[in-house]
Structures are given as C-alpha cells and as structure tokens.
Image 1 (cartoon, rainbow, N blue to C red):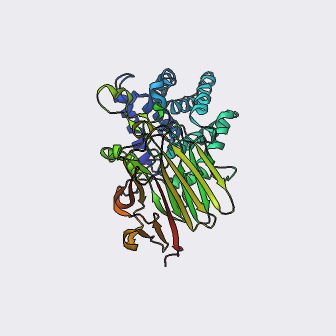
Image 2 (image 1 turned 90 degrees about the horizontal axis):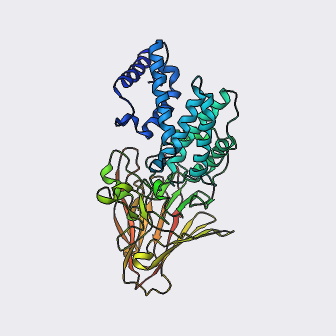
Image 3 (image 1 turned 60 degrees about the vertical axis):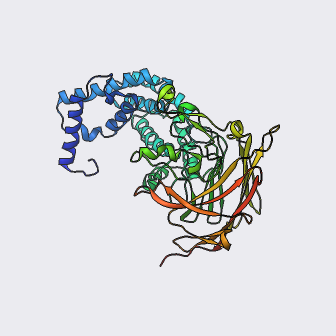
Length: 466
C-alpha cells in the first residue's frame, strides 16, 4: 500500500490497522500476541509509521502507541525464553527500534541494546553465517539491521559496535551463498530467492567485499574458478532450538556455470506446500550420499511425546572435519561426517576438486567403516539433483550422462565406468512453484564398492542466446 502511494491506499492501510487494534484482543491466547508475531509487527509498524499515522486523530494515535508499548513489554519478558530461540533476535531488534523511535523510549534503550548485543553474538557466527545455517536468514537480517543502523544515525547516536560488526560480517557471508545468477544456494531451509532484495541489501555494503570462501564456523565452502562455482555444506546441524528449518544435507553441494545452475538441492517448498516440507528436509533431497535410503539426521515427530521438540533435529553428524587446499591446479576440499556411524558404522567422506580453468569438477565419495566395525552390507545412492533448465541424455550405454544447458553449455558426467541412472526429481525453489526435474543416481553396496570417483567435464562452453 505504501508502494502504491495513493491517498486511497494509505487510507486503507490506516483502516486495517485501526480494525486490528479493535479486534486483536489483549495479550494472551490471541495469535496476534505470539512473541514472533509481535516482534515482526513492531518492526513493520515502526517502519511504516509515517503512512499509518498520517492525519490520524489523537485517540487513534494513543491506541497505536499503546499496542506498540504492550508489545514491547511482552517481548521483554520473552527475549530470553529458550523455547522461542529463533525469535529472540527479532525480538531484540524490535525492542531496540521501539526504544529509538517512540517518544520517551530512551530509558529503555540500554536494556534493549544489551539484549540485541547478546543475540547478535549468539546467532551471528564469527564468519558472518547464521547459527541456523539458513542463507535466507542473512537476507532478512540485513533488512532489519540496516534500517536500525540508520535509526541510530537519525537520533544522533552511534550504533552499537556489535550491530556494525554484524553487518560487516553478514555481507561477505551472504555473497558466499550467491550463485552468479543472483540466487542463493539451497541449504538448510532456503527456498525461492528474491534477487532484487539481495541486490538491494548488498548495495549497502560499504566495502563491496568479496565472498567468504572458507566459512569454517558457518560450515560452508565456496570453490570458484573461471565461470564455474561450487558451494558445499560442510557443517553439522545447528543447535536443536535453531534447527526447525534445517535439512539433513551434510556434504551436499551445488554447482553452477556462469548464470546457469547445474547441480542443485531440492530446496524448501515454502508455506504453499507444507505437505512436502518433511520430504524436502531428507538427505535424499540433496546432492550427496544416502545410505540405506535413510537421512543422516533424525527429525522429531509432530505428535506424541516428541511434539515438544517441534521439527527439531534430534541427532545427526557431530564430527565434520574439513581440509581445503588451493593450488595452481585448482581447489580441493575434503570433508567427512559421522551421521551414519551409529546406525551403520560408516563414515561418509567426500572430496571435491574444481580445476583452475573451471572445466572439470572431480569428486570422490567413500564410505569408510568406523574403526573396529566390520564392513557393512548396506546399499547407498549418490544423488545429483539437476536444475530443471538442464536436459539430460544418457550416453556410453548408460555409463555416462550428457548435460545440456539452455545457453549451450554441454557437460559430460561419468562415475568411473559404473552404471548411471537418470530418475525423476522435484525442484521446490522455482519462483512459479515446484517443478519437475531429473537427478543422476549411482547405486552401490558398501560391502562391494566403498569408493566411487566421478566427474562433470565441460565439453562445450556456454554461448550467449540469440
């Protein structure tokens, strides 16, 4: 309504807020007073207050401020509530914005800033990654932190150092997740990218910095050569209270050439398809190894005794050691995880090597018996989900696959002479909704073949469409 910028739209916005104030009830059982809703409403109302308060009478103004004040005190009670961990940072942001913007709020600012500093230290890691490991979190945070920085400046106050440091760390971390087409890699709850929002957020990056390539705290690696890009998940699941959107995609990766994505993860279907959310979180929905058709993480159920845990990851990889080597030949990342150790006695190790000219991505997957455990007779599948814009053609009598992009790039995939299957898959993160796509799958048995080498080799470079 603000974007419409008409008198009627502004009047409708004020009317809706006035109706909400009348019907929302008091704090308590009404969903309007859930702490997460209150925090987001506070930030929205404050940012839109020039429109919402335009020409209102004094009584309506007082009711508007009363709702904001009531929300502030509710957030103050819940900002340290561990059961609402994912809302604590938003609550602290809302409290700080309220103290800055509302007349007479200065005495509240010290406590609000203290809560904000605490949450920023906890939820933004040293390399700028979010504790929940979802790239979308960084986009949302920048759209809250940047206006808050400006609000401090407008009041003639210096922003807290923690706030400035968080912005400085977040922007390179956000660039790390970004493919060349502007979309973010699909890890741990990331769904449809809004490239315009990311471009706006990054335009405020004073340093115009480069992306992080080795984010060991966030648990990601970025390999880049020529126009080829690989982004790898090399981290353990986030703490349980921050894992409600996280996926079982350890050691999965995404691969793109210039403006086109090649290998992807399935992504988050979003609120439009909650029935698909559980499937999208499984290991099989990611471009990595699945053992015995089960995920590397154990998710809590929504019913029964586990309902207290509400979609949290209860167990998964604990140890995820990573080594990285950058040389004249290219970049090599080697990582492993123990997510299958307890059930199958196996460690999954993955090595990825991107040549310096970007013409070949080589990989090796190993299933290593844990010391003292006999080799297991279990099946596994190595999956590579392919973006819907890429066409797959089996070659070499089923021992290879040709990948053809819409812009003319051609790659060949092979797995050391092993049979390769092309199967159906689904891509959840398309702007128009879920789309059918395909996946390359190599099947094996850990007792027979515990190591498979594979590669994507560029056969013909991209050409610009006419």
